[in-house]
Length: 188
Image 1 (cartoon, rainbow, N blue to C red):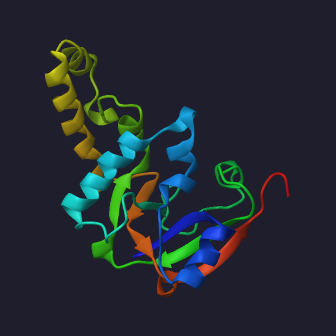
Image 2: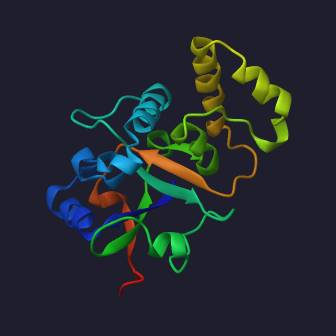
């Protein structure tokens, strides 16, 4: 499967020298920044990956992230768009086109992923109703948490059109890389 990931140049250099790269939590902005501490969400996604595609290789806790689809198209992200030019990263950023076996990737609806990040009930637009939300709010906390977490399973139902489909995978090796593009940052 072809996917794209944005990574700092140091990640790519490590890939070439170490022959395998994976998420290093101590280097992840989203796992180290108090404003964006996503450990609980990443733990949940890692658990989903274990259940759906198999356990992580030894020493790997969190997945790498990329895109399968952006703006409804399975193609390289438009790197001129603001969200890619201003991606959180120090230094030069690269877009890596990767070919990863389908069995090693978990796809999910990126916009629905925000229910997990925000720790709230996921109600897709076509199923949304005020009564469903208020019924959920009226549940005891333990039951509310169970129902909420069950609702998150819907982010993996991408058989409907999705504007953004994210891809998570445990690691990359040089053989996975098909192409590399530098991203022109706003400050460049």
